[in-house]
Length: 75
Image 1 (cartoon, one colour):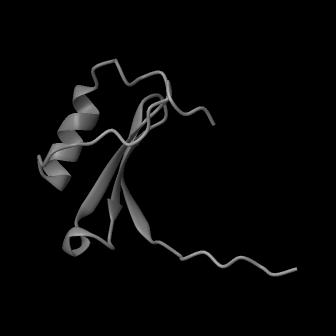
Image 2 (cartoon, rainbow, N blue to C red):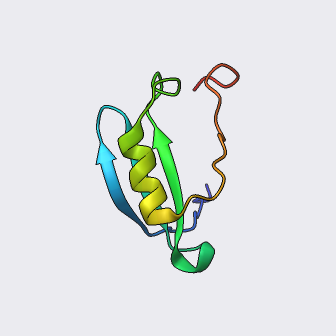
């Protein structure tokens, strides 16, 4: 049996709120300043000014894209 090898990715947590979101810095993109904003399932439709503000202040206000739709993909 062969062992799968997966790339290792270092990332930094900029902000984490157990009830709603996380803002993550990805060093492999945007000259080390790439980010992602993760939302807890069930909070997509709720406003979250704190998470959005922290993302914008630390990562810029470039366009945001939803890459997961819980209505179309169920894990």
